[in-house]
Image 1 (cartoon, rainbow over the protein chains, first blue to last red):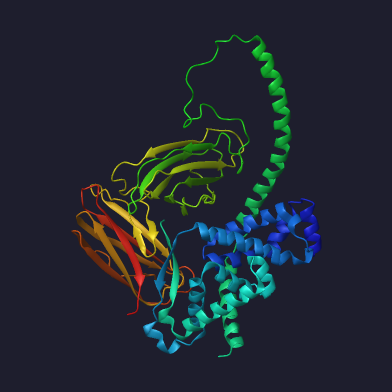
Image 2: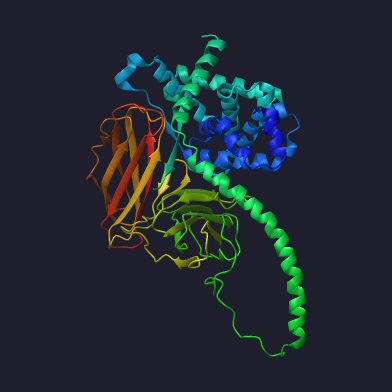
Length: 183
Length: 346
C-alpha cells in the first residue's frame, strides 16, 4: 500500500489503516520521539497520539506524498509538548573516563559525547538535529515540521554543530541531561 | 575534521543510538491502545445520536411527570460528590468521564521546598484490565504524581498544563493509590480523572482523597515523593523518623561517565541519616556496580553531609541509573532532607 492509498484510507476514516501506519512508520516515529525525549514511555505515548492525530486531522495533509514528514512533524510537536510539560531534567557534568584515555577518540567515546551534546541542546534545536541527521529530512522539511523558516533551521543546525564540535574537542566542559525518577 | 565528516559522525551516532532503541520496541501495547481509542470513536459517534434521541424523550417525559407530580416531593440533602451514590450507567472506556470523574479541591498552603502530599486511593471494577489516571491542576504550584507504577511531573502554573494520561495494563490487583505532591506557595486546585476499560459496570470507582498526615512517609509501598524543584536538587518529604523513613531516587542517566558521582545530602531539622542503599544498575554489566557508600551515616545538625559514589564502568548509553535510599532515625516529624547529585571533574 503506497502513501497515497494510505492517505485515502485515512481520509475515509478507516481505523484499520492505523495498523499499517504503525507497521510502516511506528518505529521511526518512536525512535525520533525517544531521541528527543529520552523517555521510553513518553515515546510510546507520542506514537499513539501521532497516529490518532493523523486519523483525526488527515484533511490538513495537502500533499499525500508528504505523509512521512507530516507524521514526523506531528510526532515532533507532540514530543516537544511533553518536553515542555515535564520538569524532570537535571544537568550533570560529563567527566572523562580516566581509565580509558587512550579510547578518548574511539567511536564509542565519540558517540557518547555527541549524544550527550545533543541531549544538552535546547529542545527545539535538539529536535532539528534529530530530524535532520537521524530522520534525514531536508532542511525545508525540518523547517515545516518545526514551524520555522529554513534559514532559522540552518542557523540552528549550525549553532548545534558548533556546540557539538566543542563538546567533542573538550568533553569535560559539556553537560549531560539525566532524568530523575522516583520509583 | 571537515564539516561533512563531522556531520557524518553525528549522523552515525544518532543512527546507532536509534537502532539500539528500535531493537527493543514492541508495538503490542500501542496496537491495543489504538484499537481501544478508535473503537471508542465509533461508540462516541453512535452515542451522540443516542444522547440526542434520549434528550428529546427525556424532555417529553419530564414534562409529563411535572404535570402530574406533587410539588413537595424533593428529597433533602445531596449525595457527596466524593462518593457517587450509585454507578452511572455509561459504558466504561478510556474517554468516558461522567461517572468516573471526581474533582477534588486542594487548598492547602505548601512551601516552596517541602512537597505536600495528598493520597488518592482508587479501586477499579473487578474486571478492569486497563485503566488510566489523569491528574490536572491549576495554580502556581508544581505537581508530582507518584504511584507504584509511575511518576509524572507538571507545572500547574502553565494554564495549558494537563498531565498526560498514564496508561497501564494491569493484571490482578485493580486498586492502588496515587500520591500528589505540590510545591508552591498558594492554593492549588487539582482534579483526578480515572478511566477504565472495564466491560461491565462492577463496583463503582472510588477515589478516597485523604490528606496525608503530618510527617507522612515511612516505609510503606509509597515512599514520600521526591520532587525536583530545581535543577540538581531533589527534596524529600519530611520523614517520619519514628517509623523510619526511606526515600529512593532513581535516575536514568544515559550519559554518566566513569568517575565520581557526588551526592550531597542536606538536612533540615536535626538527627542523622543513614545511606541504606546506593545501587548503580546497568543491564549491560555482568554484575551491577555497588557503590561503597552503604551504611554511611550523615549527621544532620543544620550542616550538610556529603557522600559520594563511584562509577567504575562507562554507561552503555541507555539504562544506567542510581538508586539511593536513606533512612532517618529522628522521631521528629519535621525532619527531612534534600539531595543533590552531580558529576564533576575528578
